Image (tube, chains in turn green, orange):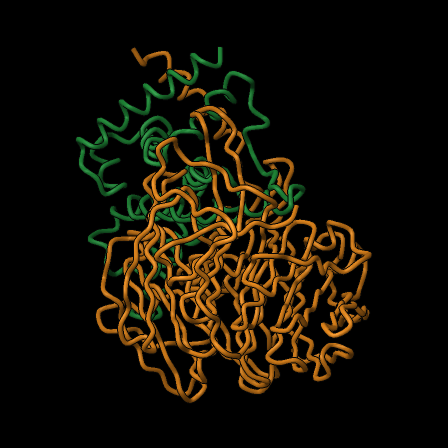
Length: 173
Length: 466
């Protein structure tokens, strides 16, 4: 932001504000699906927008901003989930009563809760590709760009993830 | 083949998304310069972990913005003294270096924090007890203060010094306005309690989570940080004692003090605040006047790294009279640490020398510790194969003040946590396991105290009394 003059700053703020209004909620949902924690998801989204402000001038084009935000949220979620997992598990072991309760899954209908629970038990990357494919509605190329992997990897990971999900859901019946 | 699964998945995700809604005004954008706390923060990397700021606690319904809460569990101020001798017979069998049957849980009571000192003494904090050892964990003694409920004990800040001096700061009950500080006399083996009145921030107590952190630079000079957190806002105040905790005086409060999670004093005047919290603050802060005034800690980025990607690993340490700080570097897009450096200052932070460690593949977890005598620096990294292990630990150890590091690799069913180093290869870490025996079985969360006596070549779990 410091690279802009006063007029540039105002314009940038307006642009970012527009992106924030348009993408905040979908990014929050994406983050929440990946970390199972709305409050943490809020942080990830805030951090993504703060990073966008800092990196604005290095974006190839303004149209790249949504993809940048999505990548930042997914990567942030990956790190946060690891960190969250470590801390939560330590907390759960040390302080059973302190386990976080901000879990949207408890309010879901049974049939949906089964799916969300099964999704959460998938390995990290399988879960990421399924959320990006079936909630964010990204195609293979977009998922590959978001995760920094090849399209082939996306394709095979989606396939394996669906198989694993299907197996788990059959077993729960 | 997957059509039905795909349909169910889409429906479940859509139903979930509808439960995640925005409160009024949430979509308003606040430019970073004018942002309220917790909004539009600068993109400083979160510290990768440990000094343990816990994730948000409550929020029973998803339509309500969750209260963030933090629990601080930290090991403080390892002491000076002669190096400890190598122990050749571990108290319990070494864990397997391979995981043929998938991750296995750690055994024994959970461990929240631990520390080892140069004379072979150490402590471990479990959910219900504070344990003390004088023989590197071969045997333990219960030194838990009487009269605390489990909830009070678990929420309290803790500081332990060599010899068994200890302080426990119990946050006030709902509506309360004082912190109970218990201090242990190692000679008598008894605890004394004092109520420390707080300044009384204008915050509804029933809406706040109160965090306490205690740090002692020596046997008499100590600091108590009390932070009240309300959603994404925090209000901290700092108190100081110069008589070992018998009396405390207010030292600083906002706006001079950022909302912080933990305090670390290395000398009677030099201290650091960890402000990497969900309360809107970021970064580390430093004082050189015993806590009266604080400035943001700024370290020079090594060549080719962006200064805004710097994140301190662990906490600053005093090692052989040198201030030592380890930091990781990352790129915002990749979101993974991909480099580390060791900073040293021989003039208490006026100037720094930096030595960059070789670039490596991204690691998920980091912690760093240096022995108080300066004989050993240890950077412990973890590379997971999956979300539940096995985990490859890379222990990088320097015995020449950070000039050169030797890497040792080992494979475990669990991931490392907070690290303390006592010199001559003695390393303790609080490790965790998230063993999931089957894809849809409940994951078993366990923690344990893992020790090495040979600089990280081999590790074994220390047995603690239940």
